[in-house]
Length: 214
Ligand code: B12
Image (cartoon, rainbow, N blue to C red; front, side):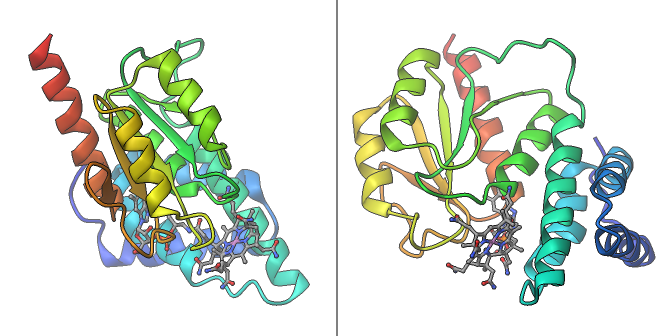
């Protein structure tokens, strides 16, 4: 895994290529670019240095801009999803479970985290956007993860009390809120992750502690 910072001229060139592909509504090209860049520089540097800032800067006002936003975000999602994914690999048991908060349709941060975890040799079970809390509870009972990460992009879905109640319901599981929707960060026993690198480090620590306890 490469952890060197990406040189500024590479960031600039990657941004231009992503922009051209998104403006052409060419999601396949966006996907290919993210696979290529992350393969060369690592998932976290490419996500934090190129993709996330580009997403935050999208205007998304006119109809044409919204179409570009969809092409870009969908291309990123599919590129991240194929990255380092082995065919037929079963979801790891006793591992890391990722899900979007109830009613939250944004979840690209989790796709980036899932790709970064695969890169780190950890793997995860990503259940996608907008997972109702009772469905998340059911998934936790079935898969018994050591860590759960719940993504909220918008304040409407970042209900800190809900994450805290969930963490109390599952005291042996580390429950983290992630994303900018947690305006009030979830309090202990739940946690709050603010960057992809933080999230990766938290998941790796938890996996190491689980392995030491075995
Ligand atoms: C992509 C996108 C979409 C995509 C989502 C695709 C997907 N599969 O996730 C689509 C097109 C589907 C979409 C739909 C909608 N969207 Co939208 N969307 C965006 C956009 C452009 C990027 C969001 C994103 O994914 N960013 C990537 C994340 C990771 O970046 P970030 O949040 O900036 O990251 C910060 C931290 O989270 C951290 N970080 C980065 N990566 C990671 C990873 C991890 C693991 C961690 C822990 C942290 C972390 O670093 C960053 C700096 O602090 C934003 C624009 C913006 N300015 O944010 C609007 C935006 C979020 N959307 C918005 C809206 C309103 C909508 C819609 C309601 C629009 C509509 N009328 O239909 C719908 C439905 C949303 C819903 N019900 O949930 C608003 C939200 C306003 C608000 N605050 O409530 C925004 C802000 C646009 C705007 N300016 O109005 N959207």
